[in-house]
Structures are given as structure tokens and as C-alpha cells.
Length: 528
Ligand code: DHE
Image 1 (cartoon, helix red, strand yellow):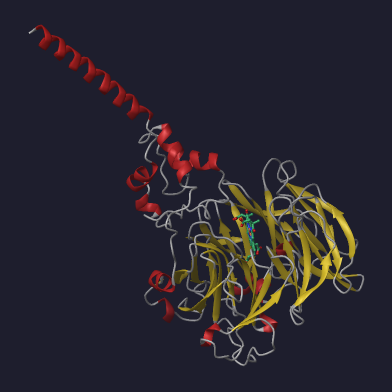
Image 2 (image 1 turned 90 degrees about the vertical axis):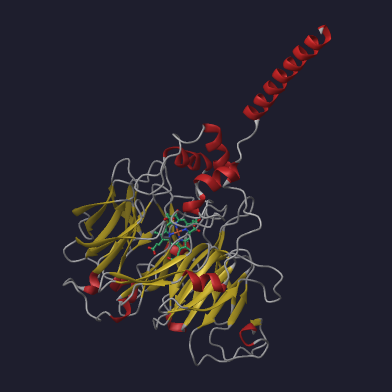
């Protein structure tokens, strides 16, 4: 009896210890992030984290979101979106585990094949049959498309009266300039999550949408308006569509032998050449893909891609012409004749950023650009200075605008600005070029105005303590429009001669604005 009592109290004690140990193990066990994700996040962000109603949460998609910011968004939610804060539902350590886990790769890696692209396409019934005439009365050539990144909307602005004509929701996080069809009726937007939206500006409706990739850089529209090319970081592909966003083909961004693959830095249309020009981020090659139906077959002994015809050389339309480079390119733009591409390399770590000139006809680098810092050539402009053609581009690292003569590739001048900037813009009819210093913590609120005849800064405009950036001129070059790049931001219209503010419209972080005329005529003062 005694021994029974002893053993039962021992059993009780052991059970208590066991329960304590289990309890403390439970308390110490790390939260199960994948299970939490499935329960709370997958419905909006997708089982595979490839996105759905909410954005993709892949490491590639999150590269630009700092981890403390991710933690804050999961805890507090994101204003003006469907993303609610999870502080009431989840413990701090569960949120921390989720915030860490979404930066790990999805295994096995998600795929996005041609069938997925085709299946993703949606079109608005009847949109294709709408009349080819604006339903509004403003000048269709002086229309501005303004991308408002704060709450992911697009505003259409009458560029004569500076009044908002329409506002609609866009895909999450549009990036790169929207691209217009040649007559200016349709505009194509690209989102970082890979969505392309075709929008009819004259009838104010989405025509079609398709997801070209899981993490996209930008889109380009061919000069004849017939083809759309999308550049992807993930997967490593280019995707070619017809004007209605029906997939024509994808290109694997690989070396000719298929051994190495690459993210695609960007694709641009080169209308005078009837081709798309493509920069690869991880392979030192610049590609040119002709959309000219009469393009010559690719037989000239250089490295080409004959995959379209399964080994049988085809006419050159849509074939890949490769130019070998010394380094891969991050961004680039062209001279007005589209004979040369100016490209910048921004290596991570030890490597020095640099810039080069590639002649697209001889298909090699013909000069190095003597630019210090981290040039943002994609935002460069060209103009005439003292009878010579020059280019000027901002610099992501230094408060400097480098001006280079295009014939000799020699530096003409370095113009000092109050801090590193992202965008530079001008217009054929304006004597001035405007540039921001948005990368500078102290001067991000300042736009510097440079006289293109003297290459001297002559004035500046400021929005104290707020980020002021990205300029685009009206069709006639009389006004310069800039963004107060804040959630409670604004679009400011300046007189481009007196630099006085003419009008201000409240907007939600208006990241970029694009004038139809300047874009479709490929104005020398803006991006194309
Ligand atoms: Fe952009 C255009 C690359 C970060 C806003 N940006 C482009 C283009 C390229 C590019 C190649 C030209 C494509 C086009 O217009 O079709 N951008 C990059 C980068 O490599 C970089 C530095 C880092 C990245 O991870 O992408 C980068 N870009 C940004 C931003 O942080 C900006 C400021 C805010 C955002 O929304 O992402 C930004 N990029 C823009 C804008 C344009 C752009 C507004 C179009 C400018 C124009 O006037 O045409």
C-alpha cells in the first residue's frame, strides 16, 4: 500500500515535470512560419507566394523592401491597400518569424511557363470594339498619364487646363514608364509583379491584362504598335505579345550555348531600327530583336539564336542578335539616331560602376564614358550645345550631372548639383533642363534648373522637407510638371521660363508622369 502510494505520487510528480517540460518546449518552439503563412497570408499572396490579390512575396520581389519595413507592414498593415495589420491576430514573435521567412526562397522554385502566361490573360468584353475617338474633349496629344504609386492609381491630366480628367486603380507597384501606341490611344503599364495592362485612353477602359512574369522590369511597345515585349527578372525570360497582349513567344535569357542564364535588365524599343534592344543583368551581352518583317536572315557568322526554327535559320524577324560586351548592363538609353546605346553597369560590392557606348551596327563597345559615381543613363537627355550634340545624365551617387560630347565621347563639363539625383528632363523648346536630387537626404526637396546654353545651374525650386522629383514638360515645352513624392503628395506645375508655380494638384505619391506627345514623338528631353 505504502509502495503504491509512493509510486502514484512519483507518477504524479513525473507527470507534472513532463507537462512543465512540454509547456516550456511549446513556449520556446519557434513559430511555424509556413503554417502561419498558409493560414493568414496565402489567400491574398498565393500559396506559392507568387501573388494574387496582394503582391508577390518572393525574395526577388522583396529586394527593395527593407526587413524592418516588412515587419512594420505585417504588424500595422499598409495604408490605402487591402493589407490589414496582424498585430491583433498574431504574437510579436509570430510576426517576426513570418517577416523573416518571406525573404527565404520558395522551394521548389515557382515556375511561370507559356501556359501560365496564356492562362493569366483577361480582357474587358467589348473593349476591343469601342470607337476610335476620345469620349472627352481635351487635346489627346497634350494628355498626361500620372502614375500614383502611393495608392496604386493612375490619373489622366488635361495638359492645357491642368485638370484631372479621370482616375483609375492600377496593378500594384507599376515600374518604368508606361508605353504608348503610335497614335497615342493605348497605353501599356508594367508592374513589378509582372502584370501588363493595356488601357484605352480614349474610351477610359482597360482593354486586356496579362501576367508576363513573376518579377518584371519593364515593357516596350514597337514603333508600329504591333508588338509588346516584357523584360523579366524572374523567370529569366523575355515575353513577346501582340498588341492585344496575346503571347507570341518567350525567349530564355541565356547565353547562346544555354549554359548561363540572366535576369533581364530592361527592354527598349528602337523605332528607327524596327527592333527591341535588350540588356541582360548577369550576362555581358546586349541583344537586338528585330520586328521588321523583312529583316535579313541572321547568317553573318556572329553569335545568333536560331531556336525559333529548331535549328533551321529563319528570316531575321524576332531572331536574337547578340553583341558581346565586357560587362553586363543595368540601364541604358540611345542617341537620337538610335545608332548607339549608352549603358551603365552598377556592380554590387567591390566593382566600380562604369559606362560604355555600344555601336548597335558594328555590335561592340566603341567607347568608355568618362563618368564618375553611379550614372543613371536611363534618365539621360540629349541636346545641342555650341553646335555640338551632347548628352547629360544624373548620377545616383554624386551631386553631379556629367555632360558628354557625342561625337568624341569626351566630357564637356560636370555640373554640380546639391545632391545625387534620379531623373533629368528637358524639351526641345526649352532652354532649361531640370534635375532632382532625390537620393540626397538633405537636398531631396530641391530641383535644380540648368541653362543648356551655359551648362550652369541658374535656379532651383524647393518643397522644404519633402521629396521633389521627376519632371515632364507639356507638349509645347512651356510648363514643367514635377512630383511631391509623398503619400500626401502633389503634382506641381511650374512655368518653364519663370520657374514660378502655376498650379498644384493633390496626388498620392505621383512617381512619374508622361506626356503623350513627347513620348510618341520621342522628344529629346524625355525617356522613350
Ligand atoms: Fe526605376 C524607369 C531601373 C529603382 C522609378 N527604372 C526605369 C527603367 C529602368 C529602371 C531600367 C527604364 C524602364 C522603362 O521606362 O521602360 N529602377 C531601375 C533600377 O535598376 C532601380 C535603381 C532599382 C530597382 O530595383 O529597380 C530602380 N525606379 C526605382 C525606384 O526606386 C523608383 C524611384 C520608384 C519606383 O517606383 O520603383 C523608380 N523607374 C522609376 C520611374 C521610371 C523608371 C518613375 C520611369 C521614368 C520615366 O520618366 O520614363
